[in-house]
Structures are given as structure tokens and as C-alpha cells.
Amino acid sequence: MSYPDLRTFLADLGGDLLNVKQAFDPKHEMAALLRAMPANGPAVLFENVVGHPGARVVGNLVASRGRVAKALDTSEAELAATYLQRTRQGIAPRQADDAPAKEVQHLAPLDLGSLLPVLTHYAGDGGPFVTTGVVLCTDPTTGRRGMGIHRMMVKGGTRMGILLANPPLSQFHAAAEAAGRPLDIAVALGVEPALLIAAVVKTGPLGPDKMDIAGALRQAPVEMVRAETVAIDVPARAEIIIEGRILPGVREPEGPFGENTGYYFSNISPVVEVTAVTHRRDFIYPALCPWTADVDSLLSLAAGTELLGQLRTQMAGIIDLDLTTGTCGFTAVIALARARPTDVRRLIHLALSMDKRLKLVTVVDDDVDIRDPREVSWALATRFQPDRDTVILSGMEGYVIDPSCGGGTGSRMGMDATRGSGPEFDKITIPAAAVAKARTFLAETGLVAG
Image (cartoon, rainbow, N blue to C red; front, side):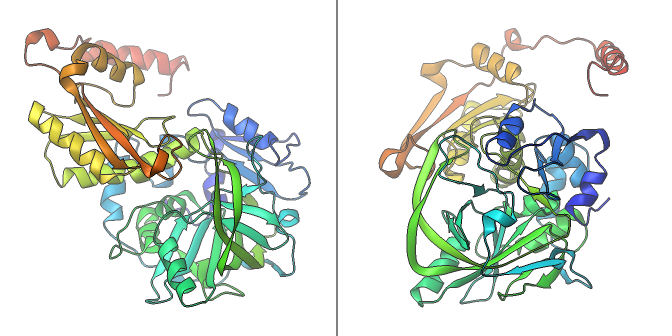
């Protein structure tokens, strides 16, 4: 089914949602619980938010592939294929008849920190940070919509710092700043997962509108309405909308912030002056804690699956690709069928050149489960020889939040962990009927999911 908003999706999760009645503070306590969640644990809804009576906070939302598949109304097995098929299409948004996101309105002057339970995640963070806001703006030259997720530091009152490391928003801001004008933006918080995923899809300058992609992912148009104080259309059923302007010619320290790399990162960044905040009466604030499975899952679907689609246009036989959990999107494992050494080398070079985040790529045969670390480690242990099967690329562009890239450049490595040609590389197996019986037994006992 198509989920029109976040709360409809949460209502359909059943036992896959943990309702937390105990009081938790947005400063450190919520992040601590989200960091402690087990792999494939449920989404978490904090119902007693210290300092913000009536508000709720949701986290761990997309940490499991099962929930992401549910959000897109598909199966885990078909998740990558569904994503690639739908993101090549588009369903345009439509104007809404009503706007729950505007039920309560606060115009500047206001204090953002008092209004919203913005999380402070890590001990060394310079303050609370918005981490899952879908930032919307339009190109001041062409009027084209821009949409992406950018971290924002709440500095007090109506002021936020915003990290603009990626296009197109960084380009739109540069164009507005060159003309001496502020750039209108709106930040949608608390959107359903398909729209959140669309915000991190990679599109080129001539690619489809991300809001059209969101419609295609959810198989229904996103309902939009004009914001109150800026010339931006916003999702009418978002939980919260922050409106404001990025000031021209203004830069301030932003950070430190515990990034998805597991390290603190600071920057001298542009500044947002907030002009209004609107929200639903009983709003749900979305938390996305850096360096958790929540971010890994979002990166794996959007960045990893997008790279898979791009690689398939260049080479035959590519079965699947996964960004390894806990590696900040810097490490990938690719399964290749009928692999020849020359094909593997070509694939490694292609992957490492297509995504500037990637530092390490391992290529395995299609008899290896790329999402099982034990199987990938086994392939490396038994099919890989370092002096023969390693590819190293030097002098490559580094990723902005990678602390190891001194001077903005770094190196990348590929490993060929595919099998040789002899029968000694045949993988041991158990007959399928016996495996099926064992899995049925474990599912009936509740030890594994059915």
C-alpha cells in the first residue's frame, strides 16, 4: 500500500515499533538508546520527551531492509529491482486540498530549540543538530527544484548553520550568493520513508525531479502546498516544516558534529535565518542518529542500489551490490557471475571511479551471500591472494568527511575474491529440502523470522 504520511506508516508497523513510555531527553539519552538498538531492531517511538510535552520522536525508522521494503510495498528480495525500476520513472506531485503540516504556525521571532526536540547526539557535539530534514529550494536561475538531506546546527533563536557539501543545493546557494541574494529554503521533517529515500537519490543536473521520484517510489503523487513565508512548495502531510533563508556572504563555525564516519567534523558553513515553523498539532520529530544502522540502510538503498544500476549499464553479469554496514558507505561488496579476472579488474576500476565515497571494493562470485559478513570473509580467506588480487588507485579525490584524506586526496583499493577454475573451489552445500525443513522448524520455534 501507499503511505501518505509518516504516522500512517508507523500505525502499520505493529510489533515492529517499540513504544517508549519512559521519559527520555533529546540531549544524549535518545541517541544512546538508538545506538544501542540491535541489528534489525524495531523502529522506536519516544512518547515522553523531556522538555517537550505533547511531542513525540521517532528513530531507527529505516534501519532494517524489511521496513524499507514495507515502505515501498515490495519484498526484501525485490527491493533493489523495485527501487531501480521506480526511480527511472516519475509521478509528479499535486497540490493538496488541505495541509496538516500547517495546523500550528509560529512566525519569527521564535526560538527553534524551544519549539522542537532537536537531538544532541554525541558528547563532543557543538549543539543540537537536525539530521533528517529534507531541504527544499529552487534554482534562482532556472526555477528547478532542489531536494536533499543536509545537516543543520541549531544555534539558538532563529539561526542555524547548514553544511552544503553536495549539489544541487550547494550550486543553487552559490548562484544566489553571486547575485547578492538570500536563498529561500524549506525543511520538511517527519516525512514517510519513500520521500526520505528520494531525498538522497543521486540525480544529475538533467535528471528527474526528486519529488517525482518520491511519487514513483510511493506509487502516488506527493501532496504539496506553498509555504507561509518563502516561495517554496512543501509536503502538505509532513510533521514539521522549517522555513527560512540562507544568508548571502555569511559563514560561521558549524560543529563539531559526530558524523557517520564515527569522528567529529567541523566546518565553516553558510547560515540559515529561520522565518517560520509550522507543524501538526501532535507532531512527531524524526531522529536519524549518525553512525548507526539507520544511516547504513539509507545509504545502502539509495547510494548502493544506484551504483548497482549504473554498473549494470557498463557490464553484464553483475548480480548484486551491498555497502558494508558500519563503513560509512566507504566499502562495497559486489557479486559477479561468470567472473573472469579481466572482468573483475574492470569492475573494480568502474566502481571506484563512479562513487567518490568508495575506498574499498571486494568482488565475489554469485555463490557468496554479500550481506553475510561470514561468507564475505570466507571468500577473502580462501579465494584471494594479496599480491595477485589487489588493485590500488592513488591520487584519487577524497570524501569531505573522511578524516584520513589529508589535503583532499586519497587512495582506493579493490580485492578480487572470486574463485579459481578448478573443482577445489566448489562450495560445500546442504540439499535444499533439508535446508527448507530446518528453516521451517526455526521459524516455528521463533528463533528466526519466517
